[in-house]
Image (cartoon, rainbow, N blue to C red):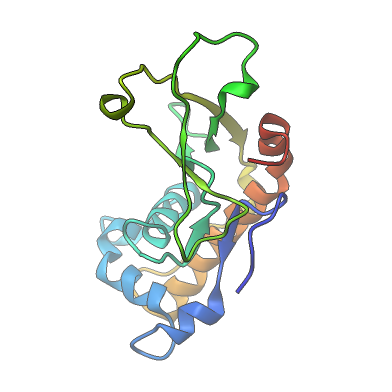
Length: 196
């Protein structure tokens, strides 16, 4: 399985997708088929951006768990969004520790580190502390990066029903967006210093 790194924010895993597939081809394809109405516009193929957003949503947790597309655990979110002016951006929400701040209120709790036994130790997920337990306020800082997505990295889908063609097109859209996110991993590293 591919691994997260400083330059990898999003991973797709075709080998795992085939291995977990009840039909022997694609587990993600089965999820797409069950949600085909979310991938079509009145029975016709959607535009490239809308299709990519829907394909991404289906490929990730909580819809698929584990997802065909996995997001580095230290990120709060990595999501494609269509803006009000019909352009696509990647929204990357990055929790920041207090040490990233010049000034902060004294005696405030910070993000807590959650390290599941099966997870990647290098990229721990940050979770909200419980102020009821510590009796202190918590200051949680999240930076949001908005990365424009060039229209030419996506192609209009042609499939108008579930099946191998729709699965291929959805995987291509998700992979294109994941590559674009990974190409901009340096922005996350600039915020976090490359480490957690």
